[in-house]
Image 1 (tube, helix red, strand yellow):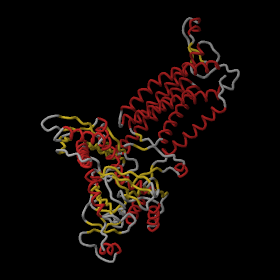
Image 2 (cartoon, rainbow, N blue to C red):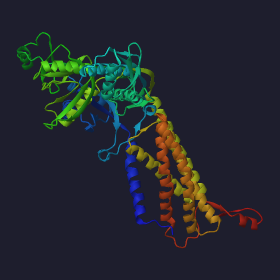
Image 3 (tube, rainbow, N blue to C red):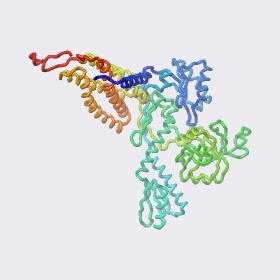
Image 4 (cartoon, one colour):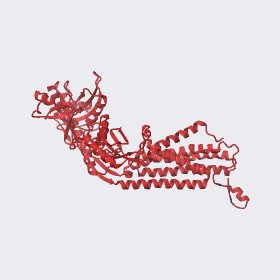
Amino acid sequence: MNRYPLWKYAIILVTLLVAVIYTLPNFYGEAPAVQVSAGKVTAKVDNGTLDRVESALKAANLTPNQLALEGTSVLARFDSTDEQIKAKDAIEHAVNPDAADPTYVVALNLVSRSPKWLSSINAKPMYLGLDLRGGVHFMLQVDMRAAISKRLDTLANDIRQSLREKDVRHGGVVRTGDSIEIRARDAATLEAARRVIADQITDLQVVEQPGAEPRLVASFKPQALQKVQTDAVKQNITTLHNRVNELGVAEPVIQQQGVDRVIVQLPGVQDTAKAKDILGRTATLEMRLVDESAEGRAAERGDGPVPFGAEKFLLRDGQPVIVKRDVILTGDSLTNAQPGFDSQTQQPKVDLTVDAKGGAVMKRVSSENLKKRMAIILFEKGKGEALTAPVIQAELGNRFQISGSMSVNEANDLALLLRAGSLAAPMEIIEERTIGPSLGAENIRKGFLSVIGGFAVICIFMSVYYGLFGIFSSISLAFNLLLLIAILSMMQATLTLPGMAAMALAIGMAIDANVLINERVREELRNGVSPQQAIQAGYNHAWATILDSNVTSLIVGIALLAFGSGPVRGFAVVHCLGLLTSMFSAVFFSRGIVNFWYGRQKKLKSLSVGTVWRPEEGYRRGGPTDEAV
């Protein structure tokens, strides 16, 4: 009656094994390490960087426990902080020969001590949030007015060019506030302008205002206005990610809050001034013509000085290129950059889109300089670097492409650099907090003690009150906690104080389900059914109640997840996962143990489920009594 088929026990064993493996990394602690990450958006961390770091450590007679390329950083782990500091100095000297212009960020860090075999199966510990590890917290507000104003200026230029191309003689295109006015001398011209705008500028809605000088008033469509705001926040978040990587922070939190705010949390970073400096840094793009004169080519070969009116920059492969000082376009004109493939050569390329003003400039300059090179230069930290210098193959306009000998990954990287070189709209820090590491450690200690203390007290109570069934409940409770930590570790979730509170709440919900099951079993015994039937009926009847109560709690958790943000969402994630693991452990896993223990006993006479009070027997004896079953 109470026997699981073999496949159900197999599921339990596999789940238990997976839960143990993916929980293990959380108990190994952290090791001192040196992290090498890109200090410029043009710098790449690859196997070449790994070899340089390895050579530097060998030269310094330092042997790391582990040296590997992980993601976009090189991590070298050590046994002690002394070796860590010596290694940092050695690596810094090797990868950044020019200390005034560092290409890489060499930072001290703490990484998991998990053994290689756990890392090889992607078993990693949970990240600790700002409140548990310490660090800095910023809330930045995006200047939406500036983003909208910039987009309106671009659209006004697009309207002027479109009307010019269609030979529509307007009386002026002027931006006033949040709208663009297009004036015309007569109704026919106004109608022609309206058709051009409707066909080519789909982001705008147009209203006609009659009068002595009729005019069109164009404003953003609601969905277009929302897209401008959304794109501005997204591009700023992408740029912030690139900049935060320079700090060597392993698990930064950069997320949108509300419509126009961005939260940046940097766990482990205590240097607030450096963090603010990097977050507020600006990067600019410039497009310039390469100096193709004899003096310029000689300077490229190293046979002569840089000509007057030109500058020397290095390409990404280290080759020099001499470019003229005159700037053709800046990054402000660039509206989009996407990787792709050339339809004729099938080679990777990057498609660039500039605004109307930039398109007109590109058309003029390209037609005058066919078969000559044009360099795209990124300025950062006051220094410039040539991203690429392609040959102008044809007359260019609003849209043109960069192609050449580059791989798919290089095309993707170049498109990302061009898109994320600068912020889409200015941002201002409106909130700043610093949390010390000692406070984080204290929070971890107290949170750990509260979870373990509550768990121990509940186990003792259940074992005393429900006997052997209480021990089964305690085992399933431990399995629930193990499974919850394993899932959070697999998801690489960031554990915060609200998350620990949700974990403690999940323990309470799990033990509530076990109490329901044990009481249902007692009730069946009280009604006089046999022990085997009591187990089956108890679990079956309790399941409906457990499902009802957990589903209602799950709805609340999903609502918090959908509408909450920050710590509320962190609480909701652990709460929802805790409910699911609670139902699995209390019903499926717990019954598996009970079935394994009692299911094979054909002549089972009693259950160790504490005391069962039978009122009819108490009344027969003159009053209520308890009977141990």
